[in-house]
Image (cartoon, chains in turn green, red):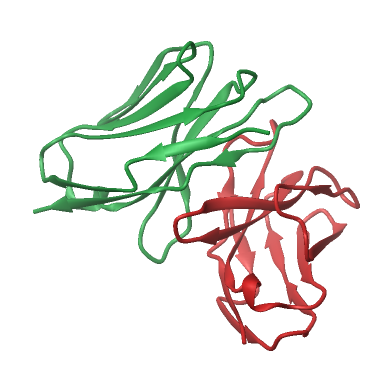
Length: 114
Length: 113
């Protein structure tokens, strides 16, 4: 089955700086890569996702990049703000193939230092 | 706005008890999921369902079962609760392409004593 590794497990950055979270996956059939954000005491929410037919996707201060050859993808947050403090989870799935289970990484706790 | 509602926010049970965790979604979603969340382990899939009366095992189904008698309701059952099932349980639903855009419930923190 799919295995998703996520690094780092914790990350602290100064407000206004950029943050990068990296994930690797094992199954070359995976073609869908979402990122979820979970604020303290709240439910995980989808913030951005990317399919394997594109290499990068942006949404305001958030971007995700995908390297299919190396089987890794990253979340980039620019101009970080206090409300970006949360746990971020990456995930991978093979949409349209037999085994479509979504496998999550272990999470990164991001702390923005004012 | 999609609403996924889990019946209890906190639950305390004794070892050996049968435990029911209920989840209801109000957006007519076909797909429903149960995950457990543990520190350092992320979210792990227990069971999922793509249709009424249909269920599939996830990555960690041992000790659990599920029921989906109606489209909007997906129940997780711990037949005989054990201390290693103490965890945060998250229900989720999605529409259309199965694992895209999951909407999560607020979670049930289960403690088994």
